[in-house]
Length: 206
Image (cartoon, rainbow, N blue to C red; front, side, top):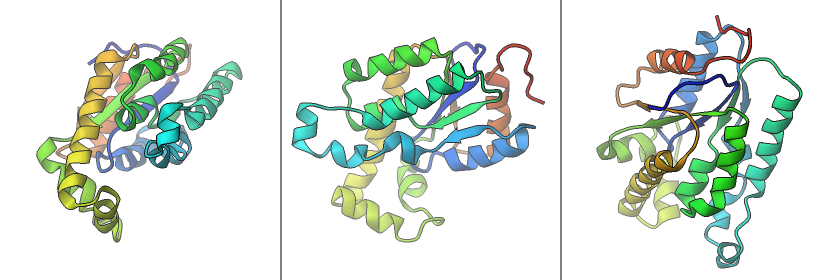
């Protein structure tokens, strides 16, 4: 666990099924002021398709990260109050395209913004039940199998993705909190995040 610091920007990371949505929902009741959210659709953009394109891999660009980072910088420049949550960012990009030298610039700029990072994980043996067999998403398992070519490949992709996020924690400059969500105790995780993220100045979360 990294050391907490004053920050109003929090990156929430984790593979599909790690519990980001459940934690975000729990945080709404844990914080007196609902945090602002930049959803993963914005931070991912078309990256999952781009990384499969040989032309993109020759000259990779992270337009979605650039756009979201500009929004984060505006949030701080405007002195916006409250917590800004960013669902996934450069650790997800690193998991999809593990070239940290291309993503280090984002880490450096996030550090300058006093951003913090929370990584949600679960034991690798739960990859199928947590990330693929999703009772809340109809046909999700079939889509995952089709995307990766087989169930075995899908499970391995989840484990690989989570392992690269772990590796990203060794590289990041950001203070971070790791939460093992195997027990799915979302309220407890939300309280842990609230204790970790310290608000800037005199603002207090209540």
